[in-house]
Image (spheres, rainbow, N blue to C red):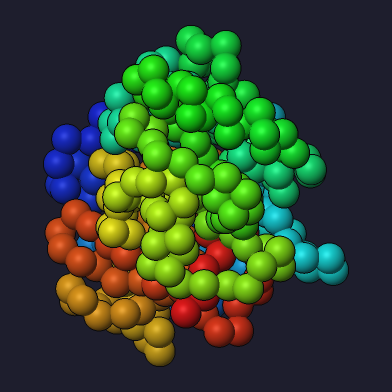
Length: 325
């Protein structure tokens, strides 16, 4: 596989064809996925549709080396988590695949990265190594043509002045941050932003009480003086992201797909408006596993949009997308 192939999807038929091809490669060359399918008594010859593909529970990234064929990873991304929790490990064979994926996805939704001032407010992730989120935002900062782009850890005063000044002069700004840091910011400073995108990546991570996304966005909207708060849905175990431009309605890029499974029957899929577990097909994950059953709860709003509602009650508190019901 080449890094370019997943990003040329033109139709649902293209997506299904590539996904089924990857399924056959997974069951042949991915020892963890092959064993998982064997326990399920899956006959690969009978898998003809997306709904018949088994999805690997995301917990396997904590306990196994999820790889397609053997390779030495160029980088290993680690999930965040509280002390004592076992971290997920995503072994990335080729970082260019990840870079192509997040650049393609962002620019498909927002236009050229170079045109934005990128302000990263990600303190909890800056304090550790192996964060896929930090890797992505750092890449955005380097691609930005503005000297003001950068990470801000404890420089709230400097960040506030920079953000409001650039917004007042009409610059395109992306302020991307974890939820608790954005809340800290608007508690200390108030803004009236007209040209900025404020994007939360989720994650209270024990810093604050959890709240539903609607409540979070209401507070941030008031604090930043803007109607819509944007969101990013991604995780350590995936190489692709979905974005929301407001009202918590997420859209996937063409090479990524969300399917809502019944919480009691993993092979039963739900219709529009029904709440269930989120399965993700990420075609960029061809070197690990493209078929992931997450511990997130959501619902399909329409053919192209979905909503994140929370997490399974018994799932670990981990990851940058933690928002509980």
